[in-house]
Image (cartoon, rainbow, N blue to C red; front, side):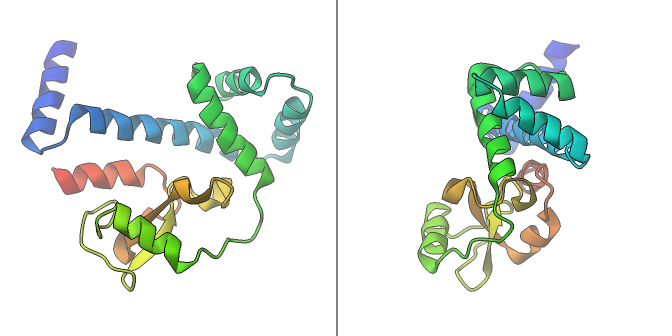
Length: 178
């Protein structure tokens, strides 16, 4: 059964010009952000937020502390690389400024150039006047603390639909490719 499902997935991806590597990479990134979302949603309870913050302040090894927190909150076991990513996200959450950074046009142009003038979700052509700057990991969770590596250019429709839904990138990528 599993082998048949894997063949069906491979076939679906191949018929739609999606490499398995790209699909797995997008799914992987989405999973990590979903883990962050779970922890951040628990931290709406101020006691949970204080407890996690205190654990980090008293920690001599932030990566192991991250692994433990993630496991306790999600039952997900992370390796060291994943723990570093999640620690970076959680650190950004705790240190985020309440005000959005105003990125200049050079950042927007560089992103548009990198994306070949296309929306990073639906692949429609966009330009500086029709594109909107978007945080891949939602701003509500990490602010601007992750810098330009957390930014993408989207068309207005995709940006409105995505809002702060981190799984939207993966969902729409698959819908637009299939």
